[in-house]
Each structure stands twice: as C-alpha cells, then as structure tokens.
Image 1 (tube, rainbow over the protein chains, first blue to last red):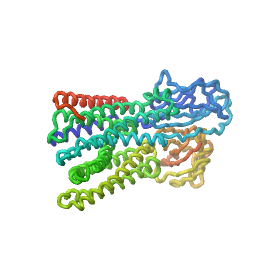
Image 2: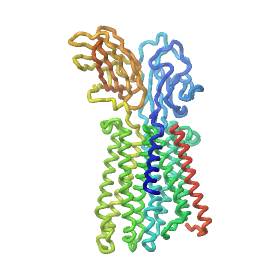
Image 3: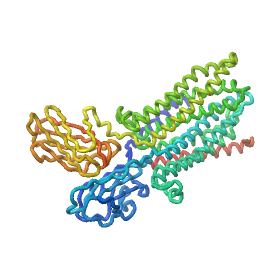
Image 4: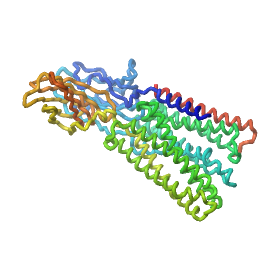
Length: 576
Length: 37
C-alpha cells in the first residue's frame, strides 16, 4: 500500500469511528416512579412502577418496599412491564395509611450496580414522614473476588495476544539468523496464556452474574441460565467464542509457519491474518462491555480503549516472551539470540508504551469531567495509582534501553560486558513484568469503578460546601445577604428548602427563586423546583429532591425584580 | 507440531484460520451493533 493509500485508510477508519452514535446513556437512570417520589396517593397502589433510561433486567433488580417498621410490602419479584420495556413493576399487598420507603438496585449495561431510594405515602392522612433506615448501599463491582477474576481474565488475554505477536512477528527472525534456536518455548507460553484465558473468562462471567443475581457462585443451576440476560454477560460470552476462534486460527498459523524460510507463503500469510484479525476482535470486547461504550463520543472512546489494550498486550506479551527466550536459549546461544530479539522487542515495547500512554491520557480526558476529579474521586485516585506504578515500569524500560541494548548490540566485539548486560536484562525485565502485571490489576479496579459524574464539572470554586444534617448557610453576593436552610437534609425523605434574601437589612420581595438538584456521584436526571414566597423575602419549598444518599449540587437561581440574576451553588451531602 | 508439506493441506488449514478470523469479526460486529444500538 502506498503512503497516500495508508493515509486514506487511516482517515476513513478515524472518520467511521467518530461517526458512531455520540450519545451515551452512562448508567441506568431512574426517570419516573409511580407512585411519585414523596407524593401521597389516596388509595393503596397495586404496584410500584419504576421507569429507567434503559431496559434493566428484572432478574438482576432488587426492589424493596417497606413501611416505617421495616416490614416488606411486596408480594412478588420485580417484572418487566408488558407495555414499556424500560419499566419495572413490583406487586404490592394492600397498604395501610402511612409512609413507605422504596429501595431499588439495578445493574447497568456496563455491569455496574446503581441504586436509589424514595418514599411515598398512602393517605388521605399518612401523618408525618418517619425516619426510614435506608438499606446498605455499599455494594460495588470492585469486590476482591471479582477483581482477581477480572485481573486473571485481562492478564491472560493480553499476554496470549502479545506472546502470539512476539512469536509470529517480533522474535521470528531469530530462528533464521541463529542456528539451532527454536521458538517452541514461546509457543508453549502462548498456549498456557490462552488456556488460562479460556478458563478465566467464563469464571469471571459466572462470578459477575452470581453477584448481579445475588446468588452463590456455586449455584450454577440458577446462575448459568442468567448469563445471557445482561449486556455484560452477552459480551463476555462472545469474548469466549472469539477466544476459541483465536485459539484455532493462532494454533494453525503457528503450525504451518516455517520461520527458517526468508519469505512467508500465501498460506502462512492467510493464517496469520486470520489469527491477527481474531485477536483484534477479542480486544474490542472489553471496550464494548465497559465504560468506553458508555462514554461520549463513543466511537473515539472505543478506539482509544482498543489501542490501550492492544498496546498493553504487545508490551506484556513482549516482556514475558523475552524472559522465556532468555531462559530457554541455553548459555551457548543466548547472546547471539538476544542480539536479534532484544532490539526488536525494545522497539515494539517503546511504540506500545507510547500508544498506551497517549490513549490512556486521552481516555482520561474523556472520563474525567474536571481536573480536580482526578484527586477527589475514587476513579481519579485509582488512575493516579495506575500512572504512578506505570512510571516505575517506564524507568526500568528506559534503563534497559540505555544499559543493556547497546551492550548486547556489540556482543561480538565485547562479550564480557554483554554477559553482564544479559543478566541485567533478565533482572530489569522480570521487575518490569511484575510492575505491568500490577498495573493490569489496578486497571481492573479502575474499570470496576464508575467514572465520575459529568455533573462534577458544574462545581466551581465559588460553590459553598455544606455537611450532612440540618443546614443553615449565609452567602453574601452583590450586596445581597442570602440565607439558605435545608432541613432535615436527609436522603429519601421530603426536605424543606428555605431561602431568605435581604439587601441592606430589607427583605427582597417578589423574587423568582428556583432550585435545580443534580446528583454528583452518578449520572441522574436533574430535578428543578420553584420556591414560593411564604413571608416577606422568605422563599420555601418542601420537595423530595434528595432521592438518594450521596453528594448533591443544589443550584439556586435568584432573580430579584428588575435586578440581575444571582446564582449560588451549594454542594451538599445527604445521608440516609 | 508437524504439518504435512502438501500445499493443499497447508492452504486448507490457512483458509480455516482465515474463516475463524472472519467469524470473530462478525461476532464482534454483531455485539457492537447490539451495544451501540
């Protein structure tokens, strides 16, 4: 292909990737409830209906409806509405007058649990809202068992693909150039990584599905039939199928490969292409099953995720392969073999690291709404840890390039320093492998955490932070004294919001005061309310706004008559 | 692994490998279309 042809292909590929639908739904969001949150109904409802932004699987959903004493009021499990696929219905027994707490938990398309709670009352005289105890909200996709399974899945997949590329493209010339050298040990290492991958993937899938369905891992009879019921499960089943196809194509490509000949035959090229295409397909599945497919613009996020995994695969596979080559060459041929393999692996590793860094930084820009979310959110902190550990591997790689590669290159003239360089190479590469393996574990944690909500970008330095519990906060802006009160400032109960506005000690009357509530910990729809003037300069509203535990952005928009508008943001934390 | 030197056998194996790659691409394309809607 000519240079112009390559440029055209690259341009078409990038344009196609960017043209993919740009709107991503992030996590499942509760859009509508019946009965309405914090509302009062006059007769006992037959069911609670929850409408989400996507079709959540009822078998992975948990919906509890409890009274003030904590007694369960549901008469059956959640089921999908016959008329709306995005709606879950939960049948109820006949409810007495009083307040009820609805707690829900569902699994999003990327495998992350999302949850929330709200209350409603059955009237006509339900009485005051009680203090409900919200069920534990600590469930996460980052449990130790899942993290280890995810790590084994990713590490074995990446190592298998990297070792295959090393065997077929990078280290192959050594067979022709150094007499008596065989790449069979690299093939064995590839086979082991592939076998581990073929076993780890279904185990990880079973573990995840068992957690979604809140069942035991060993309850295979009930968990296995549910595997295809989640988008995440379907993706990893497809990954297993693609891995089998990659194993078939890869083993055929290796079997018919004749590395001793200077040129590949047509059959060898066809088999190699088949295996490489299958490997490329396998590397796209984690992106489709994870954050990338839920991040706008999705085309770009998917390309970046694929490049990140592909670069990481070549890196870890190259390093492991280099150790295998080192250990199996035998002292007689080691220097001559390393002289051929090391410079080629180094060049590939350098290119891979550049791709890993560039795609990682770009993806972080897509995932992080603000720079401060890098250190203020769990996702950002995990990213910092990953980059810090990665820099250790980069230093070792740089030391290898500086110290061992030049000495190995002149091994014919200076064999003694080259022997030392060979031993140093083994130590440095071993440490680099350990570091990259650790980085892949941290990457597993990172992909298990929900990326920060885009709403965090709305927080500015002028925002006022308040703590859980009843809040009274005074803010002075443009000559106005504005006193905010939130009570009881608890999640899942009606809260009273009061704004008292004065200027030079005189109440400001007839202002237009609205409040918008934005969940900052996860993607959720915004709610907005207008406050009524209940006394001169005092604007109040009781609203079911803080529908779940966590951080909320309360944006007060105040328009005094005939004066410029004022905007004040409170960053609140509501506890259960 | 010893594979017969026969060009026909080698080409048949290569086509099997190529077909495996093509099926993998189809599987991932179907998955992408279902995920991306």
